[in-house]
Length: 271
Image (cartoon, rainbow, N blue to C red; front, side):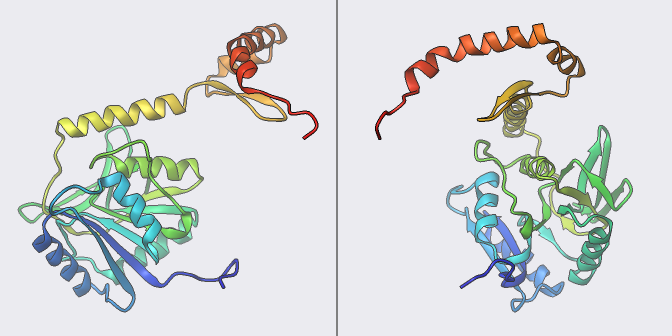
């Protein structure tokens, strides 16, 4: 029986990967083991996409977040190698972030803080060490090649998005909505590719923008006890305090939803 407050982490780390090339994954896994991520304290989970993409970045990450049993979940590409920094270095960085902000949920070695404010520490193809920005930094988004997730944050990514791009961005947005932060730290690793901003990437970008534009639209929220305006627009909030404006707005919504309410609401007497 598990009681509330019991420690249920079975491993220190869960290293999770979508695999399209088994030889590359084996090389990646070996580099993790050599860097101190041993089998006794770490579990290695992978989804076999060698024949077909049975899971994409969004559905795959969600599956790992359900199945992983580690205190920290590392979701990474198969084409990275831990040839420089190791587990001890990562744990030092995690401790540093924990002291700065115990409400962190996501850590990476690459991400962005704002427009043109991109931050990374990575060795790229050709063995070129690329460095940009100040670390550690709290960021808006992280790159997908190497992500450390605090399992106790109970994160997920969107069910209604799909593909192999921008799920790191989606993860950070959801973490922020839940009150958690994301960080980029000085953890150098080899990433064999620079990514591909292709047609698929552009489609997912449009889908993600559409999803969050709709979610963040100004709107009135009705509960069983009250209703209120959700909007970052100060003018709308000022208008909402005018009794005449509020009257006409409420009349509009009453008219708009009257037919729905008439068709769907029933009172059962004597039951």
